[in-house]
Length: 394
Image (cartoon, rainbow, N blue to C red; front, side, top):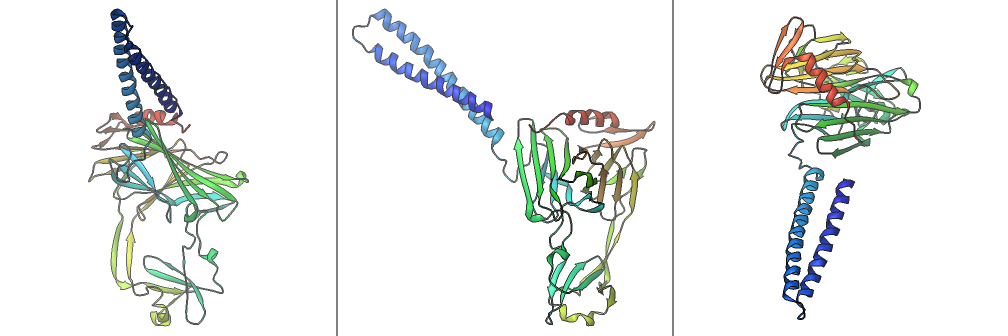
C-alpha cells in the first residue's frame, strides 16, 4: 500500500509540473514579437508535453483502479477468489469455509480443544452454556439439554461462572483481514479467558485462484510451560473418510426422531414431568427425544486424512506435519486433529479442496483425478504444502 501511495504522489507531481509547463508555453506563444520558426518550435514542444501528460494521466487512473481492486473490502455476498474463510464473532466461533461461494464445512472454535494446566476445554466456549432459571420459590437451576434428556441442577445462588464452558468467550473475539494481490490473510483473536491464558489466535492464509489454504493456532500466556496439545475441530457433513493405508470409512451418521419425550434429570435423578411441571413456562420440558447414531474412529499419527463426498465428487485433504492423533466422529460429524505446542504456537493445518475428483488406491498409494491435478496424491500434497509454507502475512 505504501509503495502505491509513493507512485501515485510521484505521478501526480509530474502531472502538475507538465500542466504548469503547458500553461507557460501557451502564454509565451501569444507574444507578438515571437518569430514564426520559434512559434512552430514551441508548438512542437507543446504537442509532445500534451502526449506525455496524457500518458501520465492514464497511469494515474490505472493506479487508482488497481488500488480500488486490491484494497477495497469485498461485498458480503462476494467471497474471496475460489476459497474463502468467513469467521463469525458469535457463540462457538464458527469459521465457515466457502468454495466458489458455496459453503462446504466449518472450522469451529467450539469444537477446537486446548490442553492447559493439565485441563482440556473448548477453545471458544460460551459464557452461559447452561441456561439459568429461577422458580417462583426463589430456587435457581442450571439447565442443559441433550438428544434425549434435559438436566436440571439446583444451585444455591445465581453464579454465572457455573454456567460457563471453554477457555474464551464470544464477547471477546476480534476479526481482521488483509488482502494482497495473491493472498488474503484472516486473523481471529480471542481475548481475556477465565484463566491465565491472555489470548489465542487463528491465522488463515488464502491463495488467489488456488485450491488450498492453511490455518495456524497459537496461544499466549505467561506460563507457557503449562500449555500442552491443541486440537483443530472441523465440522464436516456427508463426507466419507479415506485413510492413507487405503481403508475407506463410510459416514454412518443418522438421526431419528423418537416417538417419546425427553427424560428429565433433576440433581442426578430421573423424575417424572409432573415433579417439575411448574418450570414448563421457563424451559421446554415436552420436546421429543431424538436418537443419534454414528461411529467414532481414533487414529494415532496419521500422515493425512482424505474426505470424499460421493454426491458432489469433492475431495478435502487435511494435512499437518505431525498429527499426534485424530478423532473422527461420524456420530457428531466432527473431526479433531491434535497437534503439539512449541513456544505457544501449534503446527498449521493445511487444506486442499479438489472438485470433479475420483480416487483410486493402487500399489499402496492413492491416485487422484481432478479438475486441477491427476496423479499421485502424496506428491500433490507435498507440492501444495511447499507452496503454502513460505507465505507469511508481513
